Length: 197
Image 1 (tube, rainbow, N blue to C red):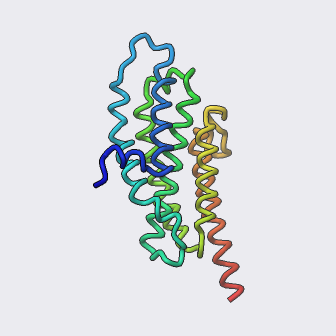
Image 2: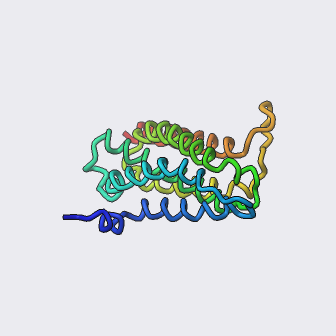
């Protein structure tokens, strides 16, 4: 019989990455704070538990050959990969934001918002990605790009000027640009495939 302690030790790398990053976030978010409160920690903990649960449930899809997965499982795998990348990148970004008073005051809300935004992004990305054959490596590369760009967000200007649109938050510029590139790549892929056939 597997004990809870043994199950905890046997968590996969995705789960451990989220847990360690989340624990590391709590210190910089209370940096130079007179009264340390764990209220924010416990407000965010349910989301982390859900993330770990799905990491344990879905991570095995990544290691399976693509031809063994039916369309719904492919879609689920891609949603998991991209959603994980947004949550993990958000946690890394908060670790680097120990001098940002706004981040320290709103970090639970930031985690929930980025996770929800990442889920919506992932759903759209994954639906379009189904048009690409054998796209696991492509999705993983995309996820790594998201982790790097989102986690380094505080080193970018807060706003980016877009002609005819004005100043827009850099986070939205980056993520929307990635989605546009994804759509363009998919259209190009389908066009080349149709010509070759």
